[in-house]
Every structure is written in structure tokens, then in C-alpha cells.
Image (cartoon, rainbow, N blue to C red; front, side, top):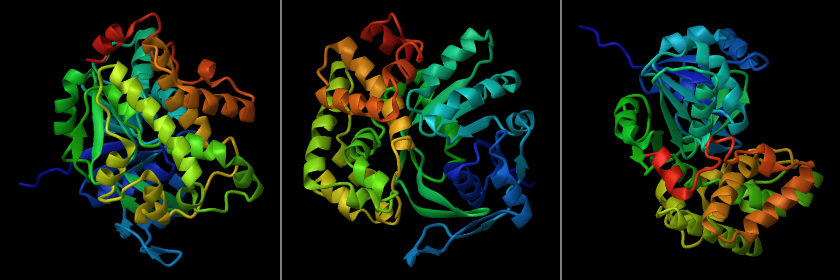
Length: 371
């Protein structure tokens, strides 16, 4: 008797979407890759090449998981993609989550699982929108701290996988279903999964929290003038910027403490996730083999390290800090400068309490709402 391969649908055809379709296929899954209107070029490339190739080397550096895999289903039809599997991965930027979910809602059915990579509190916004629109499906939302891979699209139907985390922390909404979510995801995902307390913890544990928005903000003049021609992690982290990042990191830890969450310090998290033994975050940025393979950097203030990580990571932190009375001068400074860079108001347009469906609640109510 032949045992059917696990099925998984990937919503999104960017760097992480193509990597997920390739690696999960390599891992033994039947995968369906969906590309939204305006983002279907990669699907045409996959059809033309018969599948996705992962490079063996890039710029003389050996890469992970090299090979070629055909993809079971490639589609622009959202209904077909949703019908393919009960496990729906969204490895997309936070600002794309809501629009994609709204297109999915009419086709979703009970017991399907929506996995956001990264979550960035997205499950809260999606649940709010589901209720607002009057949909009643019994869905499990899952927020992961990030995508599993360091990866890039390197050519048509071609990806470069620089590395993969040792494990992936995540939590379900509600948190009472995290164990169930991990049991269902384990046969699909190519790395171990680790339960977090709830989706608030998953957002606060995102390792992009400090390094991306702050280092990008502090280095913007050089990044713009030299068109991002850097190794971001090595070249944008100096002893001084690392000290500033440490101040911002302490703000994150204090926000978690005020909410009753014991968060993993960034250094401990990076060492654990990437099997390193660094003594400082500065050393992590300067010596990480995985990140050292990524020879690119933001080239403008409109890069997602600000438009996503400031708006969808720093803004929720600021909102929770306000509710708990936690001082956040470094977060405030970073958001103030980023707002000026982009003529924006991220506290108004980012993932604030209203967007998450948490406005009017105190911390105790919020923690009960995600339990």
C-alpha cells in the first residue's frame, strides 16, 4: 500500500515562497505554489524549466540543499491552491498578509491551518478581519518568528539557500492549539519546531526586531549612496551601532517582562538558531557563515527592513510598551527617523493595537485573548 505524501500549499511566489516550494518538495511533500496577480512571473519560469533548481555555489561559496525538484502544482487560482491542502504557508512580507488572506477567506474551510512566516502578530490581524467580514470557519492561525531559511531568488526558477535555522519557534492562535499545530506541521517542515507561549511571544522573539530597522536606519546614508553594495550584516554592524542595538534589545526584554514573558536574549537566540558560540551580537554579525553569504543590503529607506520591520515589529512593541508603562527611547528614536525618511506615520499605519483587534484592552485582557 502506497502512503500518500503530505500536502502543503505555499501562498506567495517570492524568495521564501520559491524556497519553501523547493525544499518542502525535497523533504518529501507534494507542494502547491500560488502566485497572486502581479506576481506570477516566477510561476511561468517554473513551468518553463520544469521545476525549481537550488544552486550548489554562489560567488564561490558552497550553498545548502542543492538540487532540482519538480513542483506538484503551480497555480494563479487561489481556490485551487486552498483546495490542495489543509496546511497553508504564507512566507510573505507582513504587509502582504491581509490582502492575501482576504482573497483566501471565501474558499477556506474548517480545520485549515494558516501559517505565517514570519508571523509578526499577523494572526491577530487576520482573526480580526475574519470576524469583521462575518466568516465562521474554525481556523488555526500560526505565527512563526521568521522564515526557516536564509535564501534568495538567484535566477529564473532558481534559488540560493545560504542556510537554515536549527529549529523554528512558533505559536498558534489560540495558544491552546499550539501542540496540535506542531503535530500537524512536523511531517511537513524540514526542521524541528519549538513551542512558544503565545503569538505575542512569537512576535517579540522575531530576531529581526533590532538588527534590521535600527542598523538600516543608522546606515542609511551609505546604503543609499552606494546602492546597498554591502554585506549587510558584516558591514553595517560596528562596535558603536552594536551598542545602540543593545539598548534597543534591552527595551524588548523589558516589554516582555512587563507582559509576563521571559524572552530569549538576542545573542542566545542567534547562537541557538544558527549553532554558533559567539560572545557578542557584534561577533554574530561579523562571523556568521550563513549571513556572510548574503552579499546584499537595503538600498533605500523603502526597503522592507524599515517598511516591514519598523511598521510590523517596532510598532507593536511600542504599543505594548505604552500599555505597560515601559520606556522605549531607542524604539521611539528609530520610528521617528523612519517616519521622516518615508514621510510616514507607522504608529498609525503599522500593526498597532487597532489593527490587531486589541484596542481598548489592557495587558491582562490581551494575554487572555491569545491563550
